[in-house]
Length: 298
Ligand SMILES: [Fe+2]
Image 1: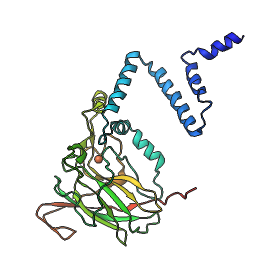
Image 2: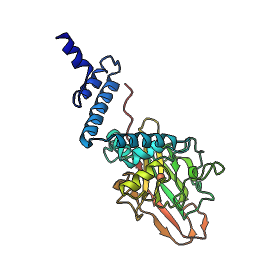
Image 3: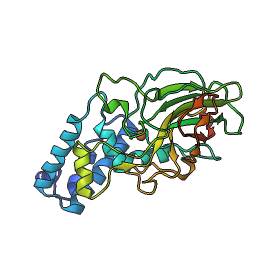
Image 4: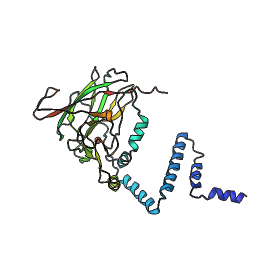
């Protein structure tokens, strides 16, 4: 009897293997980690059984994940791109940042955030020397009751008018089309940048190969990124999408939200809202951000 019980504990079939792995977590002290790993093992095993994974496919998966890791550099995060293109990033964001009472929705951070963008004065041109049609952005940052927040920070980053980000241009380029802007006493912000265009996510790595094999296009609709934050409020990582951009209905990273679509109003050459004289046509965009109060510290 003892022998058969021992055998039962040592050898596993295609079903009992799952419970066996979960039982090895019995001494895990971190309850949350235990729950996450238990669920991960359950779903991973179910997935392998569901598709009846072959050894060749298993090896392909190992090689793919290895290549994803090897494609990462301090300026390129292929794993975030993988998460983005599989809809995992936006799912995590949606679960953790439910927009209530018409507060601004969050969306994916994407792979091109670069910490430490310089603080610029209100009205600054963040896109000096950057290709693209000029666009003047303005609006307010409000609290959940609609009251303006002074000193709120917008940490802004954008690709250029051809959809390329500074981080894709080589080390000598440095930061471009980035900057931090703070709201004034009335919670207002304004700055100049460019009207962003649609662009493909990087396709020269393993995630690009995956997209091609899936029969998917790699494009994201035109958007400008920002993290909007203020003391006592939950920061939001979000975008403004260009209202008439291609690919709004098939964003490669599933980040599109209707509430974040902004109209870019076209103006002929002439006086810009900042008072400067423009010799080319330009756009104006207005958008108010509404922040949720931060949850009280426990
Ligand atoms: Fe982007």
